[in-house]
Length: 306
Ligand SMILES: *[C@@H]1O[C@H](CO)[C@@H](O)[C@H](O)[C@H]1NC(C)=O
Ligand SMILES: *[C@@H]1O[C@H](CO)[C@@H](O)[C@H](O)[C@H]1NC(C)=O
Ligand SMILES: *[C@@H]1O[C@H](CO)[C@@H](O)[C@H](O)[C@H]1NC(C)=O
Ligand SMILES: [Zn+2]
Image (tube, rainbow, N blue to C red; front, side, top):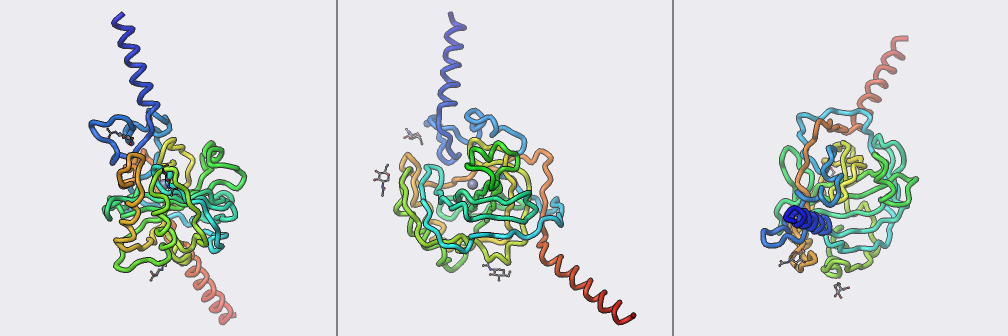
């Protein structure tokens, strides 16, 4: 009888935890156990307890330079589009047209864009997901792409390299980044979860550093950083940062979680590497041009000798 009750209680407890929505650590309080913070995500989605999770801390002295990490070709990044902008309850999400694509960067095939979203802190405090030598940045943007052959993210995550995420770290600058104004001005239309608006007349190059500055990036195999944490992501995290003013960064706190509190500290803590190697492109373009320069000097020297 007692055992049955204990088992029943246990089963109920498990059910409550597995039925709870996931949330960030900043939403967990001792008196409120209605949401599952990052430590409990594995109870909602077992892949979150896997061995190749994201984000991670990048230790620069352990990076291996990989010459195959060539520059990306960005297709459609300069084309204006109208995108659905949504408060997802955990972040803001901008849906992207599949005509936006990436190639190169030692990716196996063409990947098409699905959506972008951003992670941030509170009133300008650190809020990036990845850290570099332990340093956390104010914000981090993820442009999520899937292999061209798939129809949806849920289909792509069944392939261990089905998803390619481009990650951009943000830094605070003294002046405002005007190119971010259309996005920041739209935040007041989506303050509450499920609110949707249309972002008009934007193109992706507005939101990232100049393409010529995107030859240096870190590469590793990891996961989505929210449940279900699928281990299906080829990560590329650029060293060139996006610059926003303090006011622009703070504007993201206008968004609210479902409990009406400011949406803040929307990042997962860094996860163990578990022996994974991290790679660095080292700006392949520069290496190539040096090699070309040397060969042309050799050619002209050989030409002069003969
Ligand atoms: C935002 O969502 C809330 C809650 O669902 C709703 O009451 C409100 O009208 C929405 N606002 C807009 C601008 O759509
Ligand atoms: C690109 O890099 C150069 C040199 O490091 C820098 O001066 C410039 O501001 C960068 N441009 C962008 C848009 O990040
Ligand atoms: C507990 O958290 C949930 C989800 O964030 C929220 O809806 C609810 O209002 C909170 N309850 C209390 C007592 O804070
Ligand atoms: Zn993300």
